[in-house]
Image (cartoon, rainbow, N blue to C red; front, top):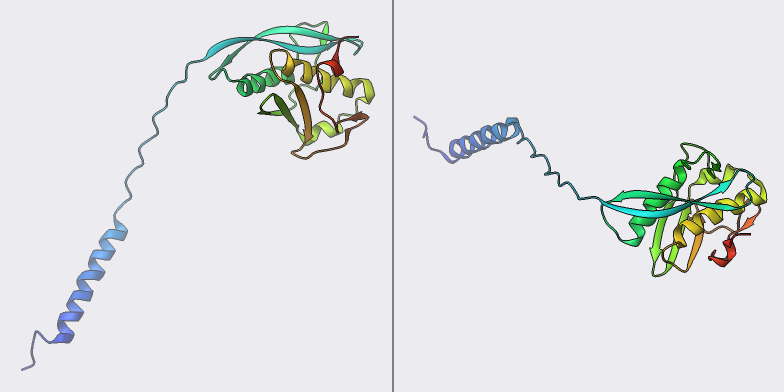
Amino acid sequence: MRRLMSLFNVVSAALLVAAFLALQAVQKPPEAPTPPQLQLAERTAVKVKVYFTDAQVQTLKPETRTLQVTQTNARVVAQAALNVWAQGPFDRALLGVVPAKTAAPKVYLRGQHFFVDLPASYENLRYGSSGERMLACTITRTLLEERGQDVTFLLAGQNVDSLGHIDLREPFTRQDCADQ
């Protein structure tokens, strides 16, 4: 009679048990993930002046808006102001500078310098020199109303020399967009 507890039989039994345990571990359903705990952030009302243009596209006209923001730092308030700017004015006597449902530019802040990243679709607006100047100046005046030194414009994340007829190589300041 052969030995029942030979080395081959013991190793085979151990492999059989290991395979059975591995099969059980693989077939066990994964644990359901716990949903993240949503934390409601308290919103703070902030009043800002958002600039639009008159019907003749000659002068800048402010419209005071109350924004609800979760943080009151300058970048968050500036981004919220440009989101409202892209939606257009409430006053029917004023004109929005971009077509309805156009994406708002992204705003970045470094020290006292704002950087505005215009979406690529802004390159195709073809407004002419006065319309393009109003586009840049309404953004500049909106951002520099409370703080900041200047606004540098980017197009689709890249430095560009111009947007249509308007030179974007140098930052815009309050003096560049003074009322006429």
